[in-house]
Structure formats: C-alpha cells, structure tokens
Length: 247
Image (cartoon, rainbow, N blue to C red; front, side):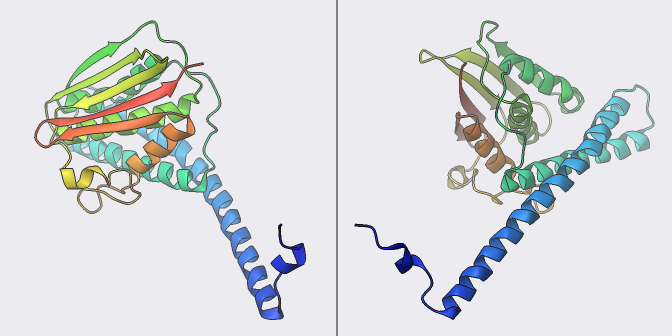
C-alpha cells in the first residue's frame, strides 16, 4: 500500500527549506533554457544570411586570392557557430518540433546544393543513388536538414581533399526509409567508435570541434523515432546509416 501523502512531505524546517531551494533552482534553470533558446534563434537568422552570402561570393570567378581566403574563413567560422548553436538548442529542448511531412530525397538534394562550394573546393566526387519512389516521412524538414548537413559536413572533413561521397536512399522490407552517407576518409579509431555520440567527445583538434555534432544528430534522429548506425575502418572510411519510419 502506498504511504500516506504526509509521509512524503519534509519532516522539519531544514528539509522544507532545501526543497524550496531546489524548486527555485529548477525554475531558474528552466527560465535560463527558455532565454538561451530565444537568443540562439535570434543568432541563427543572421548566421544563415552570412552563410548564404559567403557561399555566393565564393562561387564568383576571378576573385583575388586574398579575398577568397578571407571569405572561406568567414564561411568556415559561420558553420562552426551554427553547429554550436544547434547543440545548445538541443540541450534546451526548444528546437522546432518533430511534426511535419518531408521528402527525404528533396532534403538531401537541398543539403548537397548548399554544400556545393565546399564539395567543389575539396574535389570530392559525389554519388547520389536516391530511390525516386520513396514515401514521405513524418519529420520536420528543418530537423532532417540539420541531421544530413552535419553528417555530410563531417564526411567532407574526414576526406580533407579528394575522396568519394556516397549518398543513397532506399525503402527497406519493413517499410523504413534507409539513408546512407558513406565517405572514403580516414575512418574512426576502434577505441573512439563507441564514444562518438557522447556529448563533448571529439577527435578533432582543440578549437575545431565542439563534440556536440554527432550527439545532436543522434538526438534529432531519435526525436523523429528513427535510429542511426555507424560502421568505420581506419584508412578506409565511415558509413552512417539512418532509418526513418514512413507515414
């Protein structure tokens, strides 16, 4: 039998004060989370404009080398800030909801178009093998973009210059949409493979990676009731496989 309600109440003034302090602290943390989310949303808008503008400038021909280097640096730093803000939003749980309907192929193509300059700069060969008959997924389009953008950017960085990127989609026998993003990069060391989805874990140099990217990606995939798997071999490359339920 459950204990009487009174037995769960603080038994003395000290316990009651401690409970009140904890409640106040929790409320402050919740308010801080809401405030942070609002600030990040405001920051993301100009970041998106800067990212798009810098990419348009980099697509111009015959730019002076000094200008190209400067704009490339701007583009890289904007991407790094965007990844950081996505991580903060994920912790605050105030991102766009998972509701919606999306065409996985369309989102993948939009992400590849957005990264066109980065792909060309790295001389990466992209192979698209997208099943044109896929059903829609129950997923917020912005959330899908974040997932695919982070994984493809990671793949490009893993290959540095050159290499081959495979992006494919298909429908499994149990009616799940499968998306694979495979690179021919350096691969992930076996000792790190089990840790890559852990927040703040990174194999990148200090100041380059936040250690939030793959954590946020996995978190977002699960919000869409999907799953993510990874296979990797050092010196051969890495493949991330995602599964999403259809409508």
